[in-house]
Length: 208
Ligand code: G16
Ligand code: MG
Image 1 (cartoon, rainbow, N blue to C red):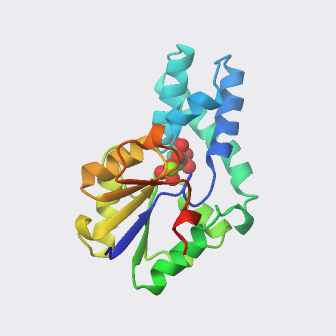
Image 2: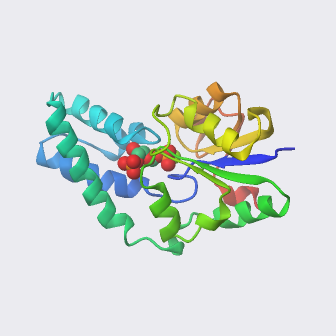
């Protein structure tokens, strides 16, 4: 029986991967980098800068730190244009219901996201109040697959990793949760989430 539940944001609570993709795609096109939705899978759960490195690697491009900083800032401006328009209709099926069910049982709820825009997104979709702790890209220095984000989430809930469960859609996130010693429920398909302790298609499957 778990005492704390830690949710990833993108791919678990909302589908912001499509907006990350559109923003990166626009920039990749500008630079003539062939970037596909298949490649986008590698960007899931990893930090903004790491995402840029992966895209530049696909294009075989080397940029100065200054140019990279500029490109990352531009990407975020484009991304913000998309997420600014988000509302509660973009909450993935079952996500809100499942979190409410857990809260009813006294389970403490945390967010464990790589995104620096997590608080803004939760506010846009009206879910901020349901979280006892929000750990995101502004609060940790080491990105997934490093366990830091999930370990800090456990600490913030005042619980040990053995008493928590992580809900993750990305391979990097599953790896991070395992490294933190936390039970992990993969959200999505077996081919990406093979290392998870359990796999479901979406949180809707867990709502009884
Ligand atoms: C999300 C996405 C990643 C993205 C990262 C950083 O992580 O899955 O693709 O690169 O956030 O986002 P931002 O540019 O907004 O800081 P998660 O951990 O919520 O899946
Ligand atoms: Mg994710």
